[in-house]
Amino acid sequence: LVWTFSIARFGGGAAAGIMAFMPTYMLATVMYVARNTIQHIGTSLRTSYTIAIFNRGERASAASISNLTSTAANTTATSISGYLMQTIDLSVPPFVSALFVGTAAELYYFFKNIKPPEEQISEKRQTQHF
Image 1 (tube, rainbow, N blue to C red):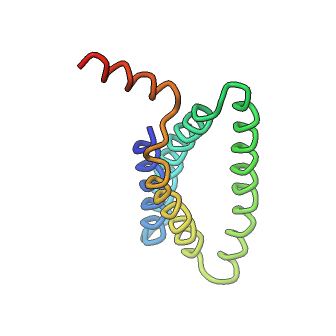
Image 2: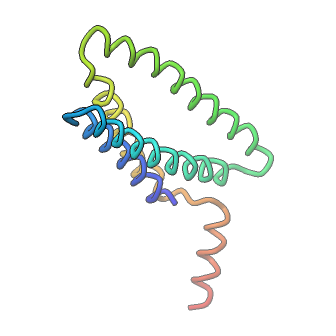
């Protein structure tokens, strides 16, 4: 699961970086839609993983905090992106997005060995059969 959402995050970052080099508005729009699709897949997987690694009593709080930080980041990013496009260049926000998402994809190495309880039980059952 961690590998899958890390790849989705990296793919979204790569799509954002490529979007900055699109020669036409139509191609940039297609790349933006592809990026958003990849990002939403990764977000769903990340949320599932985040909730799964917490105890049942803490899952609602973990989901709330995760959603709050994601919503706050999306809200402020829109304003900041508009300012950057207006004052610097239209291609700056996709580069910044690619950097943030790329660093988030690196977090895979910190979380790759933390398994949700359901996966730990499944792995123990598989090793008992051998």
